[in-house]
Amino acid sequence: MDACKEINESYTLAEAVKEAQRCLRCKVPQCKAACPISNEIPDWIHELKMGNFGNAIHIIRSKSNLPAVCGRVCAHERQCEGACVLNKTGKHINIGKLERFVADFDAEAGLTHFDILPKTRGKIAVIGAGPSGITVAGDLSRNGFQVDVFEIESQAGGMLMYGIPDYRLPKDVVLREAKHLEVLGVNFLFNRHIGIDFTIDDLLEKGYDAVFLGIGSGKPRVLDIPVTKSGSTETSNSPDCKDVILATHFLRKVQLCHEGLIEREELNINDGDKVLVIGCGNTAIDAARSAVRIGARTVDIVYHRDIDRMAALRSEYEDALSEGVRFNWNASVVEVHTDSNDNMYEAVVEIKDGENVTRTVYPAHKILMAVGARPSTRIPNTTHGIEVDEKGFIITQQMPYGMTTRKGVFAGGDVANRQATVVHAMADAKKVAEGIIQYVDAIKLMKIIEGSNS
Ligand code: SF4
Image (cartoon, rainbow, N blue to C red):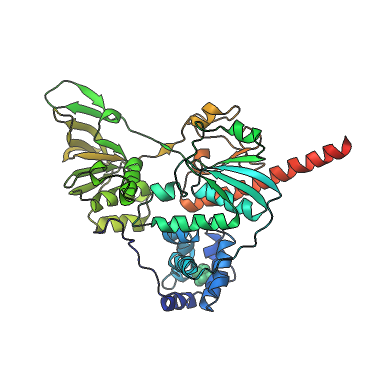
């Protein structure tokens, strides 16, 4: 199996038009209602059907800064496609695949033309070039704001770049979307570490009217699992075991390896390893499928709930199953055994079946942990006046939407505990962009009034 090759085939032009022709262009479109960013689905499908591809991408881009990404990684089955009326009588319209077709066709034909406004309305700093940051930057730039995006990595995309494997989302697609923002006038500044190279206070002192924090929740959660060393009475804890690896770190390394920036040997999983993955969200499934692709002998997902409560999409689960990933429901890893050289060789898994609890020993060389994440403490530690809740998520308000306890500083997406999919992060970021516009317009108006009264 090619570790990088995109798994889903794109439509040909004829196939896309044929699929678009099935759309009923419903008067009250349930697909649009179920889309977190209210994408004007029937309208652009209609333009596609008529062969007006430029109009189609124009309509899509009026709501989304990341159509080629959404077309590939959105949870369509739970959103637009799940709500399509044609589900009742046959098969829903393949909205995601059509959106991907339009965005990819645009990339080939260069159909996107933006109306670029002069950047006179205000100056905004966006921290983080992931889905939230890209969305805020795109929406504000379109509304006449000068936007500088400060990104810790050397390229845009955030978790789109390092958290979703290439076979689901090729990285040139992400970079292509970021390029559109540059055309809009957004300025990217890479390799800038918030809290190390600069602080929010620095930005506000430099004259930015507002700052948006779209930094995600970069501190993965870890479970404490006892680790027993063979031939010893020593017991340690899983965070200290070299063979218990964070799934997000593993996925990042896989991507760096694809880019040729690190060697295959630096990936934590070796050819022939037996791997357990703890968790059953999309990160867990991505990590499991990536482990299969790089040569793990067996990959078992161990999840403490049943299949109906997994966070992963059903389609992702089915794809993983067909690629050989095994699923263990109502199961938890309760102990890990290492040899005298600290290499893991087995894990004890507890399985609950009603009142019955059984324990099984699984041969295991590596465990990938994918049990959620929390924000880093760097922002509240380096910025005065930003309050966080008991779990470390930044507290924000409804009016103006997304503003933190520090005036002029906004946050959205994962860091503000609105964790969800890429498109939910985008939807939240769109609301925060509106909040920023309200705030900046209001303070500028106040200054004009104060100036005229003095
Ligand atoms: Fe077309 Fe389905 Fe949306 Fe109706 S609900 S407009 S058929 S995609």
